Image 1 (cartoon, helix red, strand yellow):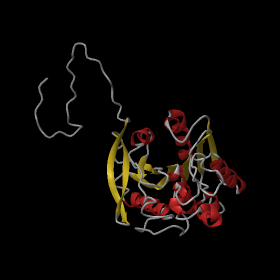
Image 2 (cartoon, rainbow, N blue to C red; image 1 turned 90 degrees about the horizontal axis):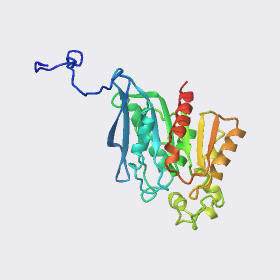
Image 3 (cartoon, one colour; image 1 turned 180 degrees about the vertical axis):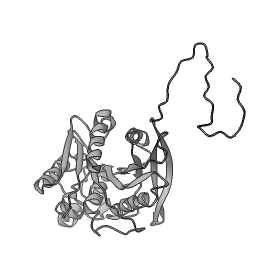
Image 4 (cartoon, helix red, strand yellow; image 1 turned 135 degrees about the horizontal axis):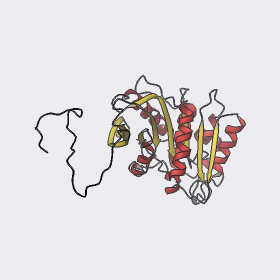
Length: 303
């Protein structure tokens, strides 16, 4: 087959039709989802630190101008320096279901105490909404999601998004979300023995003590400002999905159960999945069954 060299559009490009002995065929229907990874996008600068997003952006050949719901994902780290690359591959599976995913870096406890992490996540949402065209984001349909300490952050972001609590806006966009997903979050830092393998739990040297900046054991009431259930009775109802392993050695699943009961008591829209035999995170939270639960929950939130 001969072809002229020129600047073809896709429509102009001639289909190769020569028969090739032994060749097999895969057919593109144009509805396949491609996911691009856009690393290290700076969304804010605070306390002498650039704060980054890792962005996963789906594209469908037949729908080049389509915008997608956005999941702003807070990577857990015990509030210390995050590895925001940790779950890029795993989260790609969720992005392939048709979601832009922005993995949020927050100021860690070594440079900023609570509520810096909440402030940062809210501003990451604002950044994604302000750059909706650039990253194919449907800015009216944003979900906040996080794991471990990121579960604490995502819960507090969602529960206070309609208020001025923990907020220092970087632009005129709002930080409102359509749903909250908390995976094995440290959502009740004042719970006695809520961190089973942390012998210094709630002391100033502990992860939770470091982010609060004081001895939680001696200041339980003061520390309740960082508990998700403190904000359950706000006058709005955002759907909430909670997932927690029943053998979590890092964050006792009772924290999630207590939040679930508090939300139920307040007649809020909440689902709890106890992940049998699961420890703190792992592949079970990214297997197809789990991702299907998350996908169905999000689709319900967006209706």
